[in-house]
Amino acid sequence: MELIQKKRDGGRLSREELEFLIQGYVRGEIPDYQMAAWAMAVYFQGMEPEEITDLTLIMAGSGDTLDLSGIRGVKVDKHSTGGVADTTTLVLAPLVASAGVPVAKMSGRGLGHTGGTVDKLESIPGYRTALSPQEFIDQVNRIGVGVVGQTGELAPADKLLYALRDVTATIESIPLIASSIMSKKIAAGADGFVLDVKVGSGAFMKEEEQAVAMAKAMVQIGTLAGKATVALVTDMNEPLGRCIGNALEVKEAILTLQGQGPAHLTELCLQLGTEMLLLAGAAAQAGEARAKLEESLFSGAALEKFKEWVAAQGGDARVAEDLSLLPQARHRASLKAPRAGYIQGIDPLALGLAAMHLGAGRETKDSTIDLAVGIELKVRSGDYVEAGADLAEIYANDQGRLEAAFQEALAAFALGGEKPPARPLVYRKITAEDV
Ligand code: URA
Image 1 (cartoon, rainbow, N blue to C red):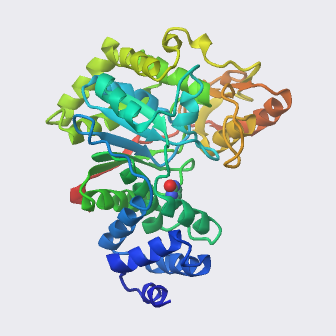
Image 2 (image 1 turned 180 degrees about the vertical axis):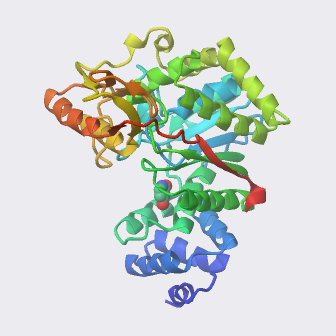
Image 3 (image 1 turned 45 degrees about the horizontal axis):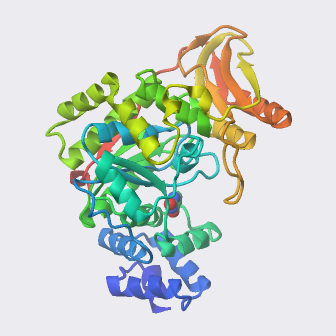
């Protein structure tokens, strides 16, 4: 009760006090109602940077942690706060590995309108997302890359606290979100982090100011925890790539590794990859890092690394040459422009939800997903279309769901007479110096 009172009155909890609170909660000695009161006090009073870092490290240490010290080199992880048509991990992992930086990544599943890397990878026939820690470490030492689902129980304190926050109106607190994300990242063992903090209508943070505050909080935690950390604040007012849905996003990643990906996705991969190479010390400055990545991408080395990685995890690497080996939907339909005009905007949230209703995403944690279904965009904001031109292709396995998603997806496109102004892809870079 004294700790709740201290936070309620704007005080700062010490590391010992936070340990008492969090460890007591995990052991079941502190009841939900007291934890909820503390979370609400944090919501209103905020936390000091060292206090947020203490909370993060206590949560990171509350369960299993992955020890990646057996992997040679500096391991840099990339984390996105969640977007739509954002398949950067599938491109970045082999791209960065082919430029000589080891990538040992633990990824999650999708929930709601955003996708998850582990689900996407499971659309590659045979791909194993569950490796033992030793298999994972050996593979990264052998070929430089591995991507697995979560093993063991990482940051169980965060899991409990997140579920409590979800039902007590305390999710939307920057210290609590930043510590929640970073606790899981730190438990997964990387030496440094490149964070992609999304901002816009399809993101958790709708306004740039909020996203910058979140990016600063996460960079500060990483830095105080002794991990090199940078964040890019990037646009999510429109889907990043063209494909939304699991097998479709694998197809898009392969096309990108063949040098034929959408411009925005390719550019963001090069920018995030540049930050990863810099943090790992594989290049002295950004121009050199980018040149290495472009060389890997356009010479086909990154695509070869993708095949090596997929094969090492039991997957059918022939998908990289023959996209028809990926799961295919039974039905497809073209969404047509109802009239001529400029595309003013494409709402990522509406399309993410339409794809989820087709079966590409989970409405609840226990939903099963359909790997083949989704939406493929044919246009971007600023394009001019004639009446009847293709806006998107919808892929479905159920005729009823196809019809419902069709209307939902159509509503995502805004058409108008004027060409809209272009938006930046990257708004800000936040480094340790900025915090
Ligand atoms: N994602 C997380 O992992 N934690 C939060 O608190 C919010 C989003």
